[in-house]
Length: 210
Image (cartoon, one colour):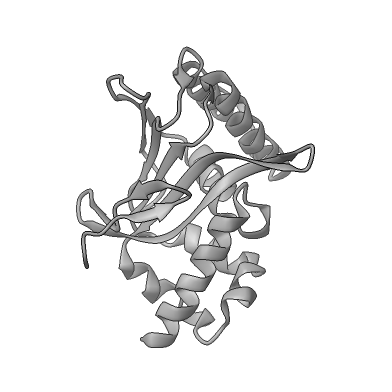
């Protein structure tokens, strides 16, 4: 694969990264909100996956990108696939770390509660996330990564505030880890529909070409 960077709303993403093995950029998008008829972009997102995931998604071969984007079962299978996944999230608009933590914690807690999986262990893990992000200010070009090994845990989260040293934390609760993936990659319930659409179109093409 070539080394030319992929631009996601003026943010460069490498087409491939190497963790324990090479992972390919198979989807990208943004998070945003609309305020007073203006679209405010907050982050650019790159989703890196082990291409072995194609073997776990053969059931959807022949489906169009539009069909996959509306199929939550497809994205649940993508999340459940026991392959390495890596999210790279770059700030477009600066926010407080506490604002990001509240968004993530609230979304994951609501999903856990709906699944009747929100217990003391999950609450403690979410508190760790809040404590990790709260002291920091996420300026433009700050980078957050989620490194999901094959399976669900433990997961390494890194934060590289613009111009500062990278910090790391580890999550070990499977339920929390799974629902972080659902927040970003959960089909029609994802926080980033543009990323879901990008993944759907990529997999429609890759599965058909096999």
